[in-house]
Image (cartoon, one colour):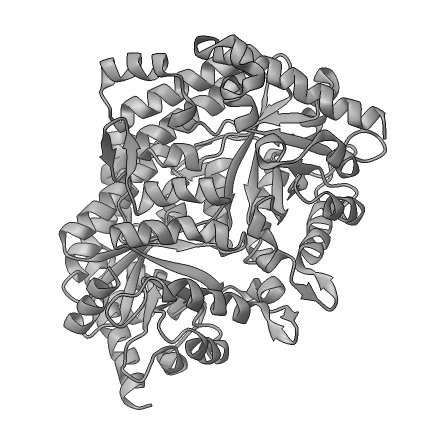
Length: 308
Length: 308
């Protein structure tokens, strides 16, 4: 799946991923009004509004982008109807040729991680039959429990040709509280990065490993160091746009081949119509605003890469 | 909810929690056969088998125990039908007066953690209405992202009187890979434990905080140290039984008041009928074997506490 991700990136010339993290506050009133008229202000109504919002954004952007990253929490908050909308979103994006990165940040002891891996990127056995319940292409994984929490995910990646992005240095302000603590004079995130390189070595695609890393756009200097520690790992870079990262900050996340990183923007794309810059589109044409925001983001990052 | 947990523990004299982590391999053939005859070897069939298995164990043990801990991965692996069985299990346990600890190990950046908190222990707003989608009493939280990943959970705890158990030192063999790394001469898990004490101070029940910690039974010496670092935090102790922990190892997880810890056993209880010790019950009476295993576990832990 890393090979498909890279081929999609080369085809679109867009090393970006759109974060499908719909909050109800991002969804235009006309969608919510119509859906609630039908289903009421219910969990089912919220989930249907989320799905309709996603679908319109996907329809207006899928030809420009290689991948999407739905954040499962934004669906899980609406319970089972929300998770149905998550699944529908995953399936629809895949039908459009997009690579789907499930931002699930799971991670547990061995047998439990194996269950998460089966449910999200693998197959689960029921008697003589097997099923791929959520069927994402990649998932994000939390490494706090160490190798035996990560290995079951890697095993499934090998079997099913799926991929992982393991949290190394997250984009949020307090990520340093534990991740930056010095161990033998070096920050913990570097040790996690070394482990990612080690885990990934056994699981190579053509040029890059199936095991990637998450490193926040908000920490470009750390990205530079981590890029060298994990040369064969794709880096998923959250924190662009709304969280403060800019294209010029991101060049060191990429390798010399122009590959090796994929930059996520969520709110900056899906709620673009709320920004002054895109308000000319109006709320009804929110997905056109998203399309323009995608083009601007690609231009910003490609420009920075060409000028480095 | 910490007050209710403690009151349930005092009432049952059982500082234990039954881990409802059903693997299909644990479920007796007669249940699977009957369910598959009806629903086929499908995700729906697997989920129904899980639910019937859980219900029988709950019916045979609820009067002896204060709490249950369903591990959501074991349900999530069966996709949406699996998560329906999770929800059904949560609701049924609550109807029996049990405290429900959702072992979800979520944790993300602020706005995303807020969505998880709303979905699992809080309420989510849809227009003018609000809902409690999964409605557990406690959840487990992964702290790797630091305070701003944990604070949204704490905020919901305060509003809704729910509780947390934050991963400090997990029970698995490789937990030391990152958690034991020395920071200024002290292991990382101690720093996380200090943070738990700090987070918990603002969120007190009667004698204990709403913010507890997870510390594995497999690391009793570390439990002793962490008990002192977090005197007001309840410790959820996984790893008893199948993972290797014994009652005598666990006394230092408790405070002098005999409170402060709750020991989890999953496989050792729910699949007790597969052990030589309980094979006299036979597969059909698996839940009676679970009941006896609960009584043995309580006896082991209470005995160790009385003899310390």
